Image 1 (cartoon, rainbow, N blue to C red):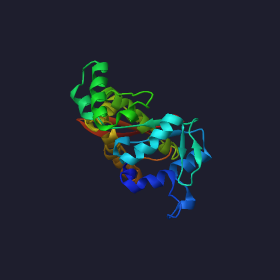
Image 2: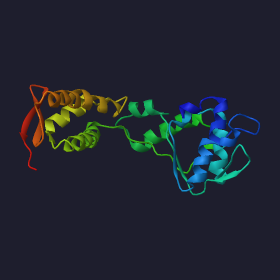
Image 3: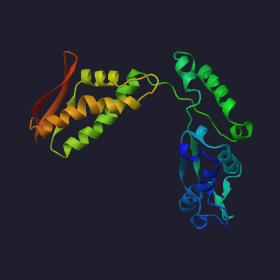
Image 4: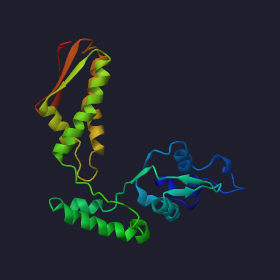
Length: 228
């Protein structure tokens, strides 16, 4: 919601009032829900929005409707609204290993310092996520590497990443503060970029199985014969 940090950005959500530029276009949020009333709405990093945005959301969370800039009522009763926030992330990091309920209570105290009670009282549930550990990062790495598998399959090549290579890329891409964000960059730098150079140089071709493993702490790419 960083694009809705300014006071005038409310008009982008519900539409400009009569006599203002963009009046006929309608609001970004209201028009989307009008066209697709059965929707899941994600408001990412909600704490960054301007206070006037929360005033608009109060009507939605309380009555399940919103009045746009043209005075029309938009029904939100068939939508699910999910809001994310980074509030309390430093608390989660400082309480690693503590009981989850204690962490949740501490984060809730941080949340109450930022949001007004009338807004919080209209939220059905608050979910506090656990911090990612190394095993979680490796699971995410498998998912991201699957995309590389699919791209190579179009070139009639297969990819076999050893457990040691998966563990190392997870270690390189793990950051207790930034979570899984550095992982994509680590996969690109350690596996995708070197592999792309090798393919362009003719080291691998159709029907090859590319084996990624670790030798003396470094990623190594060997060629095998594809089973298909």
